Length: 466
Image (cartoon, rainbow, N blue to C red; front, top):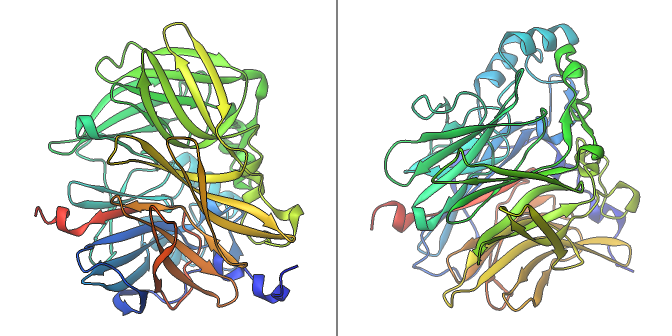
């Protein structure tokens, strides 16, 4: 058994409001960061989980914060701020909740029928054409000043985004373009498709009608296709229209509908191929490639949508109580023949994992990075894991009480993860060698950073046009 006391596993600050907010300040580095490494790690998550006397029902409702760790000359600086979105500013001025499910029933009803719920900007950062955005599922992108982290407001990217803009854009390097989608609910639910080229304006590729209002979190992209798995998690329209809480009860699992596979040719978006398979759930894709007429898609698969309900507000999650843990996903590889409507999916690894990231290696292979979990002596332990092209898995296991976040590859040599240490009640950035998976450096952030969902590394040298 672990020698640490139960107090060492106190994760409450990880699921609490962001404490001190500030601009870039020096923070200590242990180990050695290359003098040539220049850039910023941006991470997004809920910075306010409880306010105005009420805790949000679900982490997805939290008001967004942006955290940035800037590295230059072997030194590091930290900045972190809650984003003062229009909805948050209005609520704080009114002294009550207005645009979330924490609002009173009359306020919720008025907001739903009079302009939609609050844009929390709490899920993922996007860096595009030198601009920084904070994204969430149900709203337009929110622009953020990359140097001050000041919230600059919602953007429709030149009138291109009519409604929602997903938190999971996907860049296709061969096309020098980033793609994304958004769901538009109404009498007919539409899947809007967007293209954000490295140079030039954003544009709407087209819209695909869906059979039902659903929850859709992520997608995959190859050189020529956009790939969607429409799991049967349907929006309960009457509950939404009546403004009934909690948030997670806005959705229901309807396995009889199956999961719909939708493949959209990028150069001919109207020529959609779609068919249904047995039901499964996925939140995140790892990557996708084309192989002799088939599409090969790596993703984290679940048997159903139980994870959505298990997360809740985070208040009940424990590293030592198995009954409180969210269900784990499995890394799968699907092979799709879009013409013949064939779909197969096999597990690549049998461990619990999430937050996959794929990076092409110099030798032409592809590595998949994962946050994974394993129980040791009754304690949930976090790992940063790497799946190599030959199918071999490699792990760096964190100490008991250390909660890892999504791994973010930095070039070919490094990978970074934001870690919360329960024993210290503070966070740090762990820098690992990509080959050895051994620590290269640690950046002590000297304060607790609440849970973040996703991050992006912005190369400072490349961003300056060098």
